Image (cartoon, rainbow, N blue to C red; front, side, top):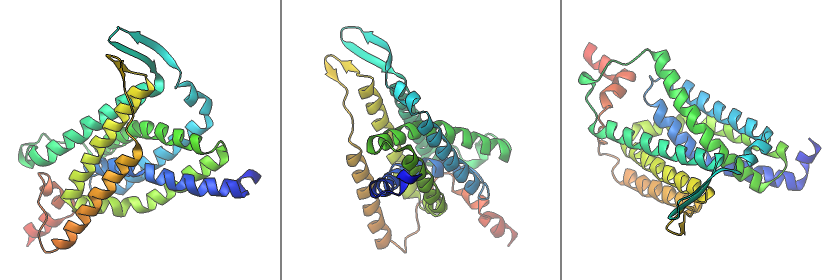
Length: 276
């Protein structure tokens, strides 16, 4: 613990905590969109469970750094002449995680814009089964986000104590703000669409990074990576433009997505109107 209170360790702690929060933004977006399918009272529970799982996965990976590093070693080689690859555990996880994000974001966009109306949808399961399904989705994607986050931490410092404290602090801060962020996203359909577009971008980035780490080469051209700075600049610029649009159109009612009835029922709006 003494190594935690040196000037170098404190600077690394502050820097890493900030980076963990920035890298956790995509995680919060996914958790908020996944939790939106639950009732109002279950949404905070799902968000908190999701972020706690993120913290647990990250701490476990930090204690198993040697295992995480071993995932970078190729376990299979492919050489077909026109296609070459050195497949590692890390590249497979990132690639599959990217595909899952692409599928999830595209499915959500379809559901909100062209999905079936409430009256013709199949009956859903119990509240407990819904919560379990959402938590399983969050847990799966947290594995991908945790590996990316911890690799960033290892590149910044080798002090495991600093990394663990930074992870715990960042998760606590994200838990404090995940509720307002989730409510804001749910109230504004444009932000929901932007959030799902961000997930598509992040999914593509993970696929590219997985292909790069797997040394994928097609017709002599090796797969490159997408710099995270470009991605976060695009996200920040899009949010800035939407913030300006929201200021200019304060009086205009937002467009209603396909599941607006379910959202109104969860918040008690339709029930109240019906009773009147």
